[in-house]
Image (cartoon, rainbow, N blue to C red; front, top):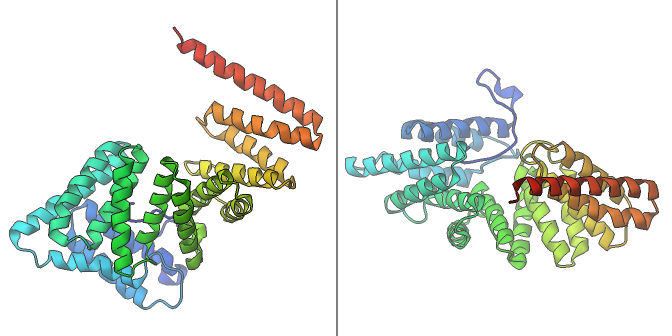
Length: 349
C-alpha cells in the first residue's frame, strides 16, 4: 500500500458494517483512496477521503488507523486540486503519475527506480502544494523509506525524514500514522548508520506512540522497532531495558514465517542475550531452540546466521550442564561450517 502497511484482514463490500470494526472500515476506504492514486483519479481519492472523514467523525472511542486531524490534513490537498488552473492541474497529474510509478516499481522490486520516481514526484509536488502539505510530507516519508530499503544515500534519507517530522511537529500532528511511520523509518536509518544514541531516542518515541494507541499488535513494524531497540540497548549494556523491549515485541506474537519472520528472530535473540547478561537463564534454552527451529524453516535464511545462533547457544548449554544437547549443537556447528566451506570452494578460483 502507498499509505499504510497493516495486518488487517480482507474487507469486502458485501460485509455489513455491523460485522466490521472501525479499523476495518478505515482500511477499506484507505484502499479506495490509494486505488485512486494508481488510477490517477483525484475525484475518486477525494470521495474516499470524504467518506473516511464522515465515518471516523461518527466513531466512538474505537481504535483507528487515521485520526480526524490526519484525515483533514489529507483532504486539504485534494480539495486544492479542484481549484487549480489547467496548467497547474496538468502538473498535479504528472506528480500523481510519478507517485503511481514509484509504487509499481516497488512492487516489481525495482527500489532504486522507485526512489527516483518518488524524488521526481516530490519535486513536482512541493511548488504545487507547499512544504507543509500532506502530499509533500508523505512523499518525503516514502522517499526516505525507499532509500533505507535500498541502503542508498542514507544521509539524504535522514535529512528528508527529519524535515518531514519537523513539519508534523509544527502542525501538532505527532499522534498521526504518518508521524509514527517517520519515527520507524528514522529508527531503521540510525541502525544502518550505527548511531545507537539516536536510534534509542527515536525508537523509544516510536514504541510509545504504538502503545499509546493500544493497537500495536496489528503493526508488523512494532516488532521491527522493538527488536532494533533491544539490540541497541544490549550493545549499550542496558540489558534491563533491552529485555523490556524484547518482551514487549514478543508479547504481540509477531509472525514466525514470511518476510517479517526475521523481526521475530531478532527479538528472540536479544531477549536471550539480555537474560544471559543478567545471569538469568530461565527460558533461555527455549528461546534458542525456537531460534534454531524457526530459522531452519525459513527459505533462504543465511547459513551464517544459523551458525551464529548455535555458536551463541553453545556456552549457555555448557554453563547449564546440558552435555547431550551441547554435543548435538556442536555437531550441527561442524556440519554448517562444512556447508559454508563447500559453498566457498565452489566459487573459488
